[in-house]
Length: 640
Figure 1 (spheres, rainbow, N blue to C red):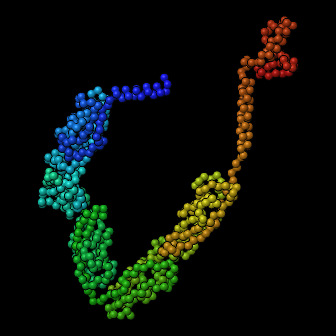
Figure 2 (tube, rainbow, N blue to C red):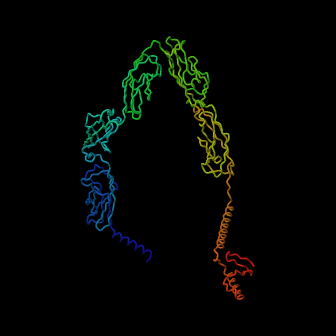
Figure 3 (cartoon, rainbow, N blue to C red):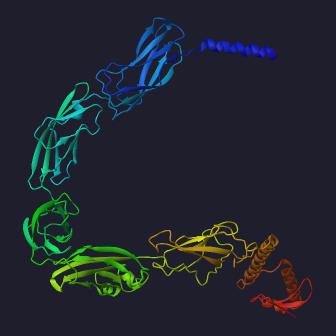
């Protein structure tokens, strides 16, 4: 059969095969179908067309599911009036089926169809379930008796206490049927504590709530909720003396103690709630001391003091203090400013004036006013009074240890009296803070030469550049390399510590030494960050060369090592063979034959020697013919 015959046979075979193979066809089947939880029973989920080769009978279509207890009916088959060989297969939702997206959010359905006499086909359908918007009371409000919530009485106002639905559906409305209740229900079903909180002084309180939920379809549900407010477990804040009346003289000056309040409790802090203005008094939040903020005139003030727990500010108590300021016959001087607070640079020269007080006595003249300075010895040595002027007495060195010990601050009090009478005196508090001035440039280290092997690994520490500065603090320096790392400068420097590290390959043949230029820049030595000073320092690095043998040397050394090991092995073997135990000597075959031959001759020439039956040690070397005496104990030869 030729080529043309083979092709004809192949075409006839394919035609015949196509006549006998018939397959059922599923068409129009969607891959994914989305259903809502609100879908009612009997809803058609999907529809598919089943095509058969002939119209003799309807096909058999079955439905299977990967998930057990699926909510779908068996496949319903109907004929297509427009096509005799086509049928319609429907997938519907079973009666009484309830979809729950939180339990199963997707079903995998398998459709298998087969027409009579044809092959079976299989397709998959994925049904996704999404959250619905229909309110179902039996599911969301399963407990008929309602819920119970217990909270502490000291919870903060509008604290969330309860959620009606853990996952609220969209479009729901929440309402409290109770009218006389301090609790609040938000539009999202969140129950909040009262706006002003619960009363912590009461015992257990109970609130019975009736909550109604309604969706946009008109379905509504109700739930009972019991809120039990338990007494607070936190310790209370109380004032042993909630009301106090104080009388002071008009001569009291600024920041003098007027009175002191005390409250019992843990972590107690104090604050003045009223009056807000004018601010005539201030309270120490820790000690409870109430001080005047200015010279007081004849007034009456009503103060409201709050004591609270610093860790739980909602735990608090209040007290009232009535302050009466009485006038005096002799008035103390009035000075401006009443308080002097200033910052001065450390370079301010001695004799400079810091402030000039403007004080007026009872006679409207300052001729009888006397000025004195009181305070610690350090303040009295650095400052002095010349009349109403406060002046610098000595140099204010910010960089000294004494200044560091003082915290760079001086406190003092200017006492102004009328005619030297302390009863008619005014005190002006003084607080002077010394600020730094960048006076000195950084200094380079005395020695800055380091050595590093050229095989040093990446990141290896070469050395540390220890710069200094006479300004305080002396360690506030920044380090940088001029030019930055590169092939000619394979090093980097730590900005804070000044450590130099290797960041590139080193080659002693190309660079026997490296010259680095390190810039030292001071920081935190002046209030103005722009007033920084710097200095350039030269640093040298006498790369140590590492020996690299040529390839031929390595090869010769390897061969020599192998030969040496072979020689040592042979020598060890010879020593082991020569040190065997007596009586187990092994001789070469030729030597043993010579010994036996010589022994036979001696026995023939000397018949009496054979009576001993022992070898006397005499033998002859087969190569040289020389006689020797063999020692059977040590295995050695002695030539005769």
